[in-house]
Length: 183
Ligand SMILES: Cc1cc2nc3c(=O)[nH]c(=O)nc-3n(C[C@H](O)[C@H](O)[C@H](O)COP(=O)(O)O)c2cc1C
Image (cartoon, rainbow, N blue to C red; front, top):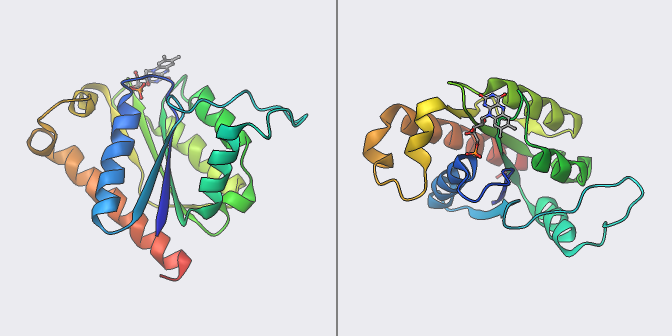
């Protein structure tokens, strides 16, 4: 299957993007094709209902990748109890044609111990877009984030609890994605 991971931080060393990369690696090890769309690396213009920027190359690239995907992973930092502005902006360019009949895994990184507020809001957006929310989600928060900073060597050995949770959620998402796509 083709899986797109949309990472919604506008920060170079974002822990949510690092989480996205780790989940991508796990899914790829299961034989699936991964595309990580990092909104820091590929910023989008502000969405306007007037239709300006609809032909923007990065917008078209995102829409094409989302159309072709069999499953979707969304990653966001938790901002003010919600998702980041850049991720919401990207989602505003998308519609039911990109999400319908596809499993979606939501993930967040928060300053507090858990970031379920942003995850709940992300799942509400997915429901509105007719995506199928994976029953598991991933929240990384507080000191746990140190396990995800770029170059940190202790991920495999240093955070068994998080490690197990990430593996469990990623595998359950892939099982759901395969089920709904008839694979
Ligand atoms: C504008 C802003 C708002 C934030 N709001 C919250 C919040 O409501 N709850 C929380 O736990 N952390 C909050 N944080 C902290 C971030 O969630 C935390 O630093 C997160 O790990 C950032 O993710 P990143 O590493 O992917 O950039 C906020 C940070 C910023 C910059």
